Amino acid sequence: MLNIGFVGVGGIAQVHLRNIARMEGARVAAVYDINTERANEVARQYDCKAYSSLIDLLDGEKPDGVYICLPPFAHGETELEIVKRGIPMFIEKPLAAEREPADQILQAVEEKKLLTSVGYHWRYSDASDAAKAALAGRTPGMVMGYWLGDMPMVGWWRQMDKSGGQMVEQTTHIVDLARYLLGDVTEVYAVYGNRGMKEIVEGVTVPDVGSITLKFASGAVGTVSNSCLLDQYYTVGLNIVTRDLVLEVRRNSFTERRKGEARTVQNSSDPYYVEDEVFIEAIRTGDASKIRSDYADAYRTHLVTVAANESAVSGRPVQL
Ligand SMILES: NC(=O)c1ccc[n+]([C@@H]2O[C@H](COP(=O)([O-])OP(=O)(O)OC[C@H]3O[C@@H](n4cnc5c(N)ncnc54)[C@H](O)[C@@H]3O)[C@@H](O)[C@H]2O)c1
Image (cartoon, rainbow, N blue to C red; front, side, top):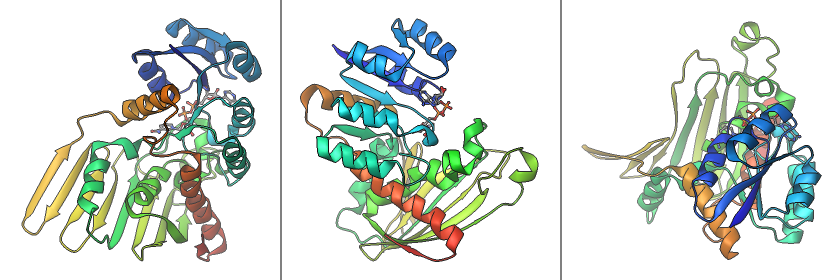
């Protein structure tokens, strides 16, 4: 039985906690959260121990793996303490609110050759598999991605220094999917704006509209736009244009458009469960080959979104 620890047990942690609890051969063994009330409640729910410090959890429990489900600004010490002890870790995206401390953590992870997985769960969806298969042997020309919806109402999200803004925090999923399907990005240029949320919600320092243009190493180009200005969830996805096919990857489906013909397939598996299963299996076997986003790969996505933030300030394209 693998004993799994959790650091940060807010919103997204509930998904991973549920998945681990229903998985054979793994159990939720211990939790830690600076919100002790929340940690105690989760510990009661999963019949495990709530620790009052990260170090006590790591040294007291000696877990076989740890899930880190912290807000972007809170990363750093947690990862470095876990890496020091050589414990495999799953980190929810994004790696940080800025470039630091992700670069320092990457160096530590590489020195230790640590098993890591990052929560870019779109990579594990049936829609992504279908897009990968459709692109084999084809030349992708361009991508158009978007994340258009309402503003998440957790306090840290609306503060630029805490979340990194929508491109770093949320639309990173779409940038990562574009990298997964088209390969690395070599240049990014961004324009951001504020079109209302600062007046509507107190304490907003993140832009509420933004677009980036991307150049890929392959020669493909693309745009990704996001907005959190809406009073409703609208749409999230990535479209890819090739000579004879347009591919539409959505949260729950994949559509393939040929001349005069369209075919849509709904996802039949839960990508969150698949990514958790793959991480647990990798701990068990020591074989990380099925992990689709490790720390080093996720870092390259993080660099694109952080560079977009830099470009939006400087008004110049950033080479990667
Ligand atoms: N992959 C996905 O689909 C997905 C979905 C939602 C959120 N996320 C990501 O997960 C991360 C967490 O988001 P959330 O919505 O769960 O946030 P949240 O605010 O609901 O939960 C974060 C938890 O971390 C705790 N915390 C903060 N600092 C801490 C520290 N130093 N040590 C221990 N605990 C600490 C908080 O008390 C809180 O309980 C974010 O980076 C977010 O982008 C990913």
